Image 1: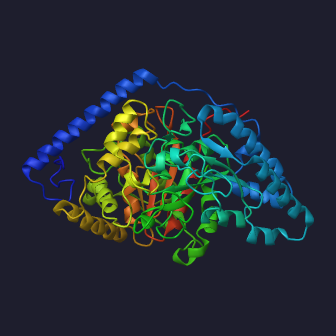
Image 2: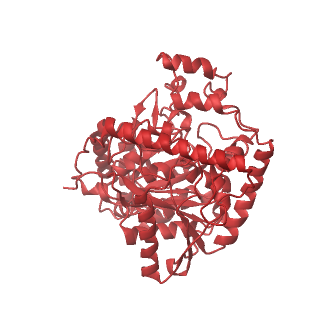
Image 3: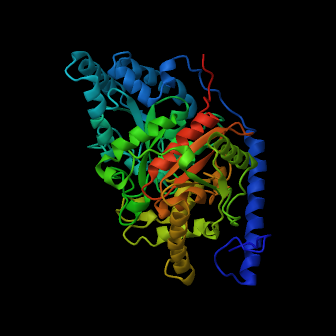
Length: 541
C-alpha cells in the first residue's frame, strides 16, 4: 500500500486506487504507533543499560590488517605475538558480548609459528611474500555459517550443534592461501534469517557500545567482535543486509560485493538457483583501507569482472544522496541522527573536493521491501524455510512449533518459526507480484543510468540506530533499506559516521554501479579520512 505525498508527485511508482491509498495511511499509522510503543516499553525496561568492555591496553589491537601484515613480513612483529594479542582480547570481551562461538587458539598459534619461521628463514623476499601471501600471519574470524575445517558449523540450528566442517569454505581457503590464520567462529541468528543475532545453541550477542541493544544479523557476532577489537578482520555473508546492518549497528566497515563475484561455496544455508546471486560473501573490518586488499583476495577468481586496479579519485566522482525510501508504510522513519550524519558526510565531501552532492529520488525505491520479498519468493529452486529448519529432511510444522515455543519446548527461535509460518504469503505470479518483479528491472535500469561509470549513491543503511534486544520483532521490515541492493546485484559499502544520541553508531551505505566496487570502496576510505571512521567502544589506555 502507498501514501500520498505532500508534493504534487506521489512517492510511489504504482497507480493505486483511493481505497488502497487510504489503507496505506492506516498501515503507516499503525506501524508508527507500534514502533513508538516498543520504543517506550523497551526504553523503560532497558533504559540504555550497558556493561562496559575492558579497556584496550595492547596497541597491537588497534593496528589495521594491512599494517599488521607489513610488520610481520618485515619482522617488526611476530605472528605469534599478534595471535596471542587477539586471543587475549577475545577472552576479555566475549563474557560481555557473547559473540564468539568457538575458537581454535592452539592450532592458530602453531600456524603463527610457522609463519614466523618462514619470515625468519629468508627463503622468500619481502616482495615475494607481499605478492603471494599478502596477509601472512594475520589472524581473522568468520561467522559460524562459513565453514572452517575442524570447527563446528551449526548456523545456529540446534540440530547441527555437534556438526563439524570437513573442509574450509572457498573464501576461507583463499584467505589461508594468502597467509591469513583462522582464529574463531562468531555467532549468527538461526539459519542466518533474522536481524538480531540469537539462537538456541549459543544465546544472544550484545552490542559493544550499549549491551542492551542488538548487534544486528546475521553477521552480528562477527561485527560485535570486530568493533570490540577482538579480530583484525572478518568474513560475513549478506542476502538482505547481513553484512551491512551489523556493521552499521557496530560502527565498522563492511562491503557487499557485486553479485556472482565471490564464491559462496562452503556456506549454509545452501544458496541454490537465483538465491546464489542474491547471497554474497564479503569482508568486514575497522579500517576502510583494509577492504580493498581483502576483497582482492576473496574475489581473485573473478577479478576480470571488476576494476579493482582502476584508480578512483573522490574529486572525480559524481555523488547522489537519498535520505529515505519515500515513506513506505511498513518502515520506520529515518532517525534524525542518521539524516544529520548523512548531510554532514555530504558537506564534508563537497568542502574537501569541490563536488556537488545532488539529491536523487527514485519512486521505485518506495517499493524496496515489496521488490525484495517478491524476488525472493520467485526463486523456485530453493526449498521452503520450514524444510531448511529440518536440514531439507522433511519440514517442521510451524503452527505446532509455535505452540511448543509458547511452552518453552521448541528447538527453534520465534523469528524462525514466524518466517516458516508466513513464507507462503506472497505470490510472484499474482498481478501485484508481477508488477514488483518488473519494477525491480526498472529500478536496476534507473540506478545504472543515474550512477553510470563514475557515480555513487549515499543511502541510509537502516532507518534507526541499533534498537534494543527483541525490539526488531516490532520493527521487522526495516531491513528493506539494505535488502533491495541484493536483488539489484549492486556493490555497496557500509561506512560508520560516529556515534548518535543513543550512544551507538550511525552511518550510511555507498552504492555504486555493477562491477564498480572500487568506487564505493574509495568513497568509504575518503569518508573515513574526513569523518573519523571507527570509534572504540572501550577506553584505550
